[in-house]
Amino acid sequence: MRLIRLGLLALALVAGPARAADEPALETVRKVYARFEETLRGGVPPLPERVASVGPVLEETFDFPAMVKLAVGQPWAGFTPEQQAAITEAFRRNFITTYANRLKQAAGGKFEVQSAEKRNGGSLVQTRVTTPDGDESQIDFVLNAENKVTDVLLNGNVSEVAGQRTSFSQPLKAGGADGLLTFLRQRTEGMLSAKPTP
Image (cartoon, rainbow, N blue to C red; front, side):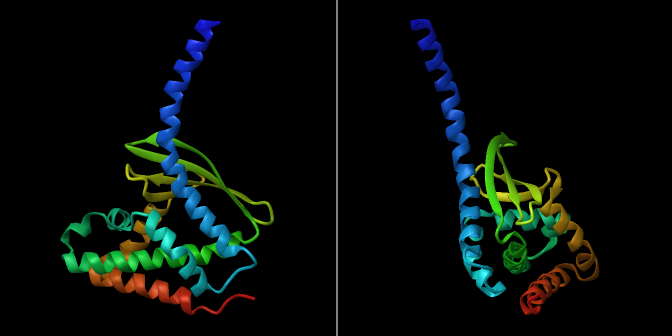
Protein backbone atom coordinates (compact mmCIF):
# COMPACT_ATOMS: atom_id res chain seq x y z
CA MET A 1 0.00 0.00 0.00
CA ARG A 2 2.85 2.38 0.89
CA LEU A 3 4.46 1.63 -2.47
CA ILE A 4 1.21 2.49 -4.28
CA ARG A 5 0.94 5.77 -2.38
CA LEU A 6 4.52 6.66 -3.26
CA GLY A 7 3.83 5.81 -6.89
CA LEU A 8 0.74 8.02 -6.97
CA LEU A 9 2.65 10.84 -5.31
CA ALA A 10 5.45 10.56 -7.87
CA LEU A 11 2.88 10.64 -10.69
CA ALA A 12 1.27 13.75 -9.20
CA LEU A 13 4.63 15.47 -8.94
CA VAL A 14 5.39 14.69 -12.58
CA ALA A 15 1.94 15.61 -13.93
CA GLY A 16 1.35 18.61 -11.69
CA PRO A 17 4.05 20.95 -13.06
CA ALA A 18 3.09 20.08 -16.66
CA ARG A 19 -0.51 21.08 -16.03
CA ALA A 20 0.60 24.20 -14.20
CA ALA A 21 2.86 25.13 -17.11
CA ASP A 22 -0.07 24.85 -19.53
CA GLU A 23 -2.44 26.86 -17.36
CA PRO A 24 -1.26 30.39 -18.34
CA ALA A 25 -1.76 29.54 -22.03
CA LEU A 26 -5.24 28.20 -21.33
CA GLU A 27 -6.04 31.27 -19.28
CA THR A 28 -5.01 33.57 -22.15
CA VAL A 29 -7.50 31.93 -24.52
CA ARG A 30 -10.22 31.69 -21.86
CA LYS A 31 -9.88 35.44 -21.39
CA VAL A 32 -10.42 36.02 -25.12
CA TYR A 33 -13.47 33.77 -25.28
CA ALA A 34 -14.96 35.25 -22.10
CA ARG A 35 -14.84 38.68 -23.71
CA PHE A 36 -16.38 37.32 -26.94
CA GLU A 37 -19.25 35.79 -24.98
CA GLU A 38 -19.78 38.95 -22.97
CA THR A 39 -19.82 41.06 -26.13
CA LEU A 40 -22.53 38.89 -27.67
CA ARG A 41 -24.63 38.53 -24.53
CA GLY A 42 -28.07 39.97 -25.20
CA GLY A 43 -27.62 40.23 -28.96
CA VAL A 44 -25.15 41.48 -31.54
CA PRO A 45 -24.10 45.11 -31.06
CA PRO A 46 -23.04 47.25 -34.04
CA LEU A 47 -19.52 46.64 -35.33
CA PRO A 48 -17.94 49.76 -33.75
CA GLU A 49 -19.24 48.62 -30.36
CA ARG A 50 -17.86 45.12 -30.92
CA VAL A 51 -14.49 46.62 -31.82
CA ALA A 52 -14.49 48.69 -28.64
CA SER A 53 -15.48 45.64 -26.58
CA VAL A 54 -13.00 43.04 -27.88
CA GLY A 55 -10.14 45.42 -28.73
CA PRO A 56 -8.61 45.68 -25.23
CA VAL A 57 -8.48 41.93 -24.64
CA LEU A 58 -7.00 41.24 -28.07
CA GLU A 59 -4.35 43.92 -27.49
CA GLU A 60 -3.53 42.27 -24.17
CA THR A 61 -3.36 38.69 -25.42
CA PHE A 62 -2.04 38.91 -29.02
CA ASP A 63 1.54 39.72 -30.06
CA PHE A 64 0.70 41.99 -32.99
CA PRO A 65 4.30 43.15 -33.66
CA ALA A 66 5.46 39.54 -34.05
CA MET A 67 2.45 38.62 -36.19
CA VAL A 68 2.79 41.47 -38.66
CA LYS A 69 6.54 40.94 -39.00
CA LEU A 70 5.94 37.29 -39.87
CA ALA A 71 3.06 38.13 -42.21
CA VAL A 72 5.13 40.70 -44.14
CA GLY A 73 8.16 38.42 -44.31
CA GLN A 74 11.47 39.44 -45.88
CA PRO A 75 10.43 42.98 -46.95
CA TRP A 76 9.99 43.93 -43.26
CA ALA A 77 13.74 44.36 -42.75
CA GLY A 78 13.79 47.04 -45.47
CA PHE A 79 11.13 49.22 -43.84
CA THR A 80 12.12 52.25 -41.77
CA PRO A 81 11.25 52.18 -38.04
CA GLU A 82 8.52 54.74 -38.75
CA GLN A 83 7.03 52.54 -41.49
CA GLN A 84 7.19 49.47 -39.24
CA ALA A 85 5.40 51.33 -36.43
CA ALA A 86 2.66 52.64 -38.75
CA ILE A 87 2.10 49.23 -40.35
CA THR A 88 2.01 47.49 -36.96
CA GLU A 89 -0.65 49.92 -35.77
CA ALA A 90 -2.68 49.52 -38.99
CA PHE A 91 -2.36 45.74 -38.72
CA ARG A 92 -3.51 45.81 -35.08
CA ARG A 93 -6.56 47.88 -35.93
CA ASN A 94 -7.40 45.75 -38.96
CA PHE A 95 -7.03 42.49 -37.05
CA ILE A 96 -9.25 43.63 -34.20
CA THR A 97 -11.89 44.94 -36.61
CA THR A 98 -11.78 41.69 -38.60
CA TYR A 99 -12.33 39.56 -35.50
CA ALA A 100 -15.08 41.84 -34.23
CA ASN A 101 -16.72 41.58 -37.66
CA ARG A 102 -16.51 37.77 -37.70
CA LEU A 103 -17.95 37.59 -34.21
CA LYS A 104 -21.44 38.18 -35.56
CA GLN A 105 -21.43 34.70 -37.09
CA ALA A 106 -20.92 33.10 -33.66
CA ALA A 107 -23.75 34.91 -31.86
CA GLY A 108 -25.76 32.37 -29.89
CA GLY A 109 -23.07 29.71 -30.30
CA LYS A 110 -20.50 28.21 -27.94
CA PHE A 111 -16.79 28.88 -27.35
CA GLU A 112 -15.01 25.93 -25.71
CA VAL A 113 -11.37 25.85 -24.58
CA GLN A 114 -10.32 22.20 -24.67
CA SER A 115 -6.64 21.54 -24.03
CA ALA A 116 -3.09 22.87 -24.25
CA GLU A 117 0.23 21.32 -25.15
CA LYS A 118 3.80 22.58 -25.20
CA ARG A 119 5.14 23.23 -28.68
CA ASN A 120 8.26 24.96 -30.07
CA GLY A 121 9.01 26.88 -26.89
CA GLY A 122 5.40 28.01 -26.54
CA SER A 123 1.99 26.38 -26.44
CA LEU A 124 -0.83 25.25 -28.69
CA VAL A 125 -4.31 25.68 -27.23
CA GLN A 126 -7.09 23.74 -28.91
CA THR A 127 -10.63 25.09 -28.86
CA ARG A 128 -13.95 24.46 -30.54
CA VAL A 129 -16.45 27.04 -31.74
CA THR A 130 -20.01 25.94 -32.44
CA THR A 131 -22.41 28.20 -34.31
CA PRO A 132 -26.13 28.37 -33.43
CA ASP A 133 -26.97 26.01 -36.33
CA GLY A 134 -24.57 23.37 -34.96
CA ASP A 135 -21.63 23.94 -37.30
CA GLU A 136 -18.40 23.15 -35.42
CA SER A 137 -14.91 24.49 -36.14
CA GLN A 138 -11.62 23.56 -34.52
CA ILE A 139 -9.72 26.74 -33.68
CA ASP A 140 -6.16 26.39 -32.37
CA PHE A 141 -4.23 29.27 -30.80
CA VAL A 142 -0.44 29.33 -31.12
CA LEU A 143 1.18 31.10 -28.16
CA ASN A 144 4.77 32.10 -27.52
CA ALA A 145 6.78 31.63 -24.32
CA GLU A 146 5.16 34.80 -22.89
CA ASN A 147 1.70 33.27 -23.48
CA LYS A 148 0.83 35.81 -26.17
CA VAL A 149 -1.02 34.58 -29.27
CA THR A 150 1.11 34.64 -32.42
CA ASP A 151 -1.18 32.76 -34.81
CA VAL A 152 -4.63 31.21 -35.05
CA LEU A 153 -5.21 27.96 -36.95
CA LEU A 154 -8.56 26.94 -38.43
CA ASN A 155 -9.16 23.19 -38.40
CA GLY A 156 -5.59 22.62 -37.27
CA ASN A 157 -3.78 23.81 -40.39
CA VAL A 158 -5.20 27.00 -41.94
CA SER A 159 -2.95 29.75 -40.56
CA GLU A 160 -4.29 33.26 -40.01
CA VAL A 161 -0.79 34.72 -40.43
CA ALA A 162 -0.17 32.76 -43.64
CA GLY A 163 -3.47 34.05 -45.00
CA GLN A 164 -2.43 37.59 -44.16
CA ARG A 165 0.89 37.08 -45.94
CA THR A 166 -0.94 36.00 -49.08
CA SER A 167 -3.21 39.06 -48.99
CA PHE A 168 -0.20 41.35 -48.39
CA SER A 169 1.79 40.16 -51.40
CA GLN A 170 0.06 42.29 -54.05
CA PRO A 171 0.03 45.63 -52.17
CA LEU A 172 3.67 45.06 -51.16
CA LYS A 173 4.66 44.31 -54.73
CA ALA A 174 2.78 47.32 -56.07
CA GLY A 175 3.64 49.92 -53.45
CA GLY A 176 6.02 48.59 -50.82
CA ALA A 177 5.49 49.72 -47.25
CA ASP A 178 3.22 52.62 -48.23
CA GLY A 179 1.14 50.33 -50.42
CA LEU A 180 0.65 47.87 -47.56
CA LEU A 181 -0.23 50.66 -45.14
CA THR A 182 -2.88 52.00 -47.52
CA PHE A 183 -4.23 48.49 -48.08
CA LEU A 184 -4.62 47.79 -44.36
CA ARG A 185 -6.27 51.12 -43.63
CA GLN A 186 -8.69 50.81 -46.55
CA ARG A 187 -9.63 47.26 -45.59
CA THR A 188 -10.41 48.37 -42.03
CA GLU A 189 -12.43 51.39 -43.11
CA GLY A 190 -14.32 49.23 -45.59
CA MET A 191 -15.54 46.97 -42.80
CA LEU A 192 -16.41 49.86 -40.50
CA SER A 193 -18.32 51.78 -43.17
CA ALA A 194 -20.25 48.80 -44.58
CA LYS A 195 -23.99 48.83 -44.02
CA PRO A 196 -25.09 46.13 -41.55
CA THR A 197 -26.87 43.21 -43.15
CA PRO A 198 -30.49 42.84 -41.99
